Image 1: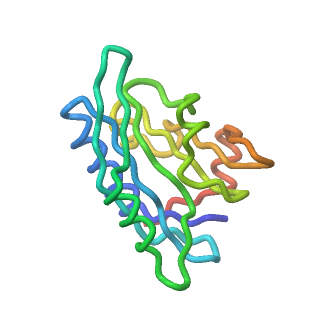
Image 2: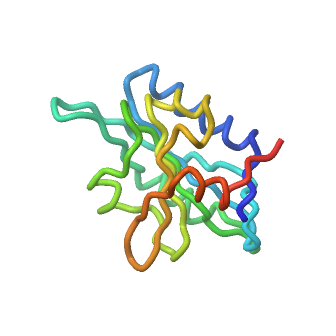
Length: 150
């Protein structure tokens, strides 16, 4: 079971909603203990892109360095969280450019530029990395894996 404090989700949501107010996606990483307790959301330096084909977010070189140095000795990356402009799904870009690929890693896609997170994880697409690919979890699997606390 992974524990996820509501305050950490709120940090991610507020950042994504702020980006979304400008029509941009946002991304962050959820750090936690090796025991599976998420403790914080790390927002790296990033650039949002809008083109005629849609939107995207790019973690800059500085942001990659921030992420590389962000973890303490007893921490690890547990999940990536990012927003989409409309429905929540794992796009081919998400599959091809994962931030983490450890078996069991989590990817949370928040719909409507972060607003979907106001309704909780059930409004999001939650995926788990298994056997080299991202698998979308059902509502029951999400409830059995992630406990939102606080």
